[in-house]
Length: 348
Ligand code: A3P
Image (spheres, rainbow, N blue to C red):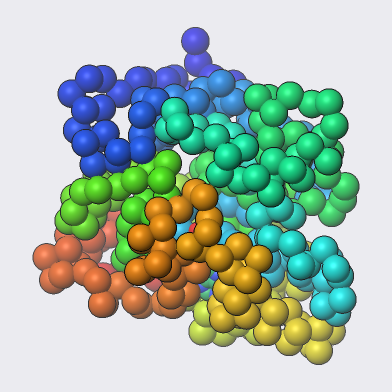
């Protein structure tokens, strides 16, 4: 039976699954591909797929959609601050960003039998119990927190537009962030090594190969981007490049101010810029939750290579990708970028 989104579910079969779990030690519950698209997700996604597709968005929401590691946390903090804390005097800003911005499909990503949001995200679970008394956590902690959250909600998802209800973009403002795939693969590799529930133990070369084969968790990078790029002229979709946000931060904040209709003054925008700069965000969040003490992280990796606030730069890939890996990504990019028009960034 197809999902409400119209996708059919293919379960990864023995040999392919075996190859996958040999390098992703944490992925112990099986994976599926959703057709069309070959979106790659854990089997647990299927239980939540229709609830996610039928999620009731509000006109007042702002939805952040990104491929993983494209700057989701950064943009969600910018938007939350613009809407809720433009004078930097809201006490709620002292809580972790992830407790203020529900990650809609988070419960649907139960990749590891041993991973549980209750154990790995005790703060989130405590917030859920306060916000949703009497509700069953098995029905989705993040989904239910999102349902009861007062306006204005900022929500996030890594699912591509085609796995969301088409009404989403007609109802709600959507911000899509794109990032250079070379930086994405470096950041994603770090993250997949860092998180116990993924526990990537293969080589970086294998990881790069999986990325260009669309075999990583979530699947095809370019199709994800293309679905949003095709909608870039829709008045409810705002497209941002990570590199522009980094290089021309205040210009991008002004554009967002217009899109979100937040009417912040120049002084307020400057405050938002400082508050959401990499060093300020990293210091603030890591003070609340030091990476070495995060139960979801592998401690040795957190201590040597850092937590999810790693470098926060554009172009760090130059320090990580070999010439062969660069060429592989360039060829893959050249094949895929044609569909975007000749002025698209990231063309080799
Ligand atoms: P790096 O691993 O390259 O450092 P996501 O939030 O989508 O998972 O993306 C994570 C990436 O965004 C990480 O990239 C992280 O360091 C970077 N990031 C987070 N906050 C940032 C900020 N305020 N400024 C710049 N980059 C930021």
